[in-house]
Image (cartoon, rainbow, N blue to C red; front, side, top):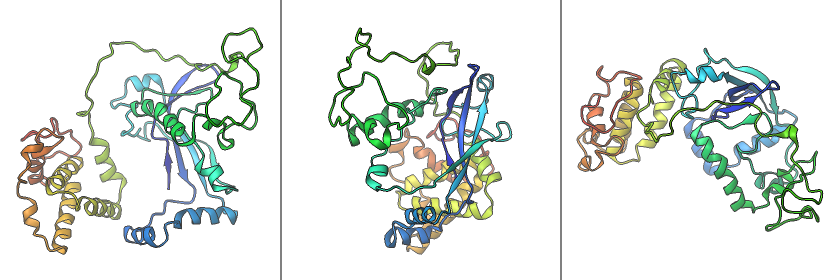
Length: 348
């Protein structure tokens, strides 16, 4: 399958010019997925199916690879973008921001010890090299802190000294010392404060954090972004990216999962997908009806107003979801248009 960085990052070139980028890893093997029924069987009978396939491919020197590309957006383009380029739920249209190939990622060696090299590895979006910096992406900002906290809890405060997480081509010299499980000499007798007069490490100018400037102005306020356009890009994906077979599998999978939810939540889900595209909601609704019929339930009971709908009238979609479902296949719902105020009757 493909891989995506999801977040927007800032990169700075040798001239100090900053750009916004998104990372893309596109599989060179082609996209291949298991049917849901087969995946469910393997989850119980052979849960190591995928990792064994990866291990054996590498052992047989059939090295899996991904073509690494980037999308690039200038600061001016970001300022004038009709959508929030730092919203992790949005994509950058490839027609406007085409993929630029950078290189390839190849997996060419299996771990010699799975625990040492895999279980103890500590990835984090905060592990930057000079020239790559964070963006205003709100989810990224949270992950810059939370990943390191998780590693400290899981592996200890000195997790970056574990061999799989530390550099091999250089020796770290800083003022981060002590703590549990120090196994590398703890930087010897060097002072643990800065500045000092005892030959402690000094900052390296060539590795300064910020190369590129990013102008910031305005007033800081707290805003609710829940009513931003959450449906247009999903509608384009459903209508123009997926083919008929893919739309059928997608709606079948959604209906299969939603089928276990309470009825008022099923109504809410159908209403939400109908705002992406009326056909989207209609297909899920139809498949839910068939699932209920096959289990002996009466589909018609599902479309009666749930007794506790008013309880949820202020929660996302509440009783408004009931009103939306009644029109889920009608032309009153414009595909790709934001609903407005969620959960209010007549909001569609």
